[in-house]
Image (cartoon, helix red, strand yellow):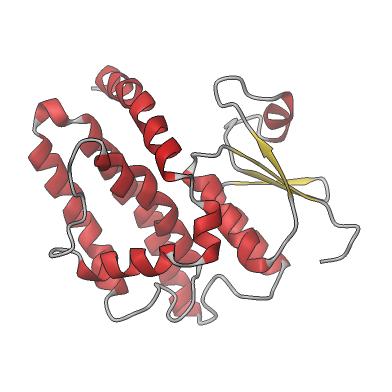
Length: 228
């Protein structure tokens, strides 16, 4: 990267969407300035850069803001071409994008719903989430990573979500959301993913993250109740 380039990332430490962007920048070896946002008291800079959605992450490259985490990943991949994130084959690339959309729009919401539906039949909610997760189990079976031999686009998407609405989200409730006997490939993949420096440095610290989830549990449940 040329010296005159400026890269800044506005994010929130516990956000899976921020986490995946950090992974991409780490993989590419891109130096950047990180600006932590207080989502309850958003900075004037965030409101200026993302005035419509007012969300993180926002990547700022030479003064130009790029929004939406998955679009940011693609921008990073096209701007810094070393260590490709997206598959090179057009079909594989299209499938990676499709599965990323599936994770963000179906798997992750199902995980959140199962967390807040405890009083409405938690067993049913968990099974609904597991049925969706099984698609990811099949996709990673026989592979080291979703992209093949190295971490890539879909690994970042799925990996950023697992701590938030999967493994850690259920630790303090004593529930194993993805038991090894049912999801052997996913558990193997999680272990391999966590062994990498990229993930270890970008995923939120376990204890602090669990505390954060506990603090937000009732708030999430209350918000869900208001919508039903």
